[in-house]
Image 1 (cartoon, rainbow, N blue to C red):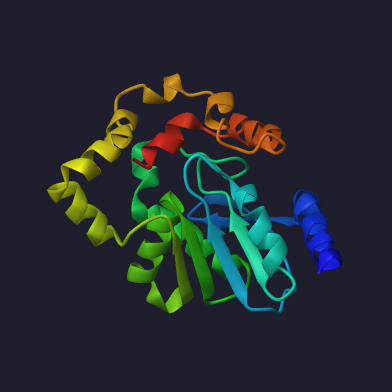
Image 2 (cartoon, rainbow, N blue to C red; image 1 turned 180 degrees about the vertical axis):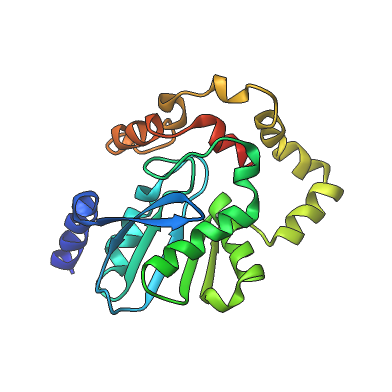
Length: 210
């Protein structure tokens, strides 16, 4: 058991260097994704939230890649993916199209789609608007969109908890952000990788999601 645990820990430590890097074309926007696992294995697509990038799925990639072909994408605006200007380029149909493009560029028609935070909203939307692309759906830390809208309309507590999103909608809100500030939540050992990824990202694009 100790040996197995040590092997998994080693896998997690070097997954950054073991993944393959690919790009999908989503209507002229390049979407970067990291991939690991047998190419003929069942496909898993992981979609991150804010502020994040593909590497946050490192433990899941390490754990699943022995049996699955695991893809972890950078959403548009983040890290190695393109960063088109204009809030209209971050509307949900575009984000759904990005996820579908990654699945298609992997040579598949469907995948188990896993989403966290904003990635959860994208994953929910893929399931609603392109159910044929969903093998299974796994959502982390985000209720169904209808439930969220209901609570925002009816619950003062939820509106208070979501106040940060209204701040993000203010003009020039992105000017208050820095890579270092966005990476404060990350584990100290991995924080330099987050800072590097966020320096490559576009803060205005990140807030366009809101």
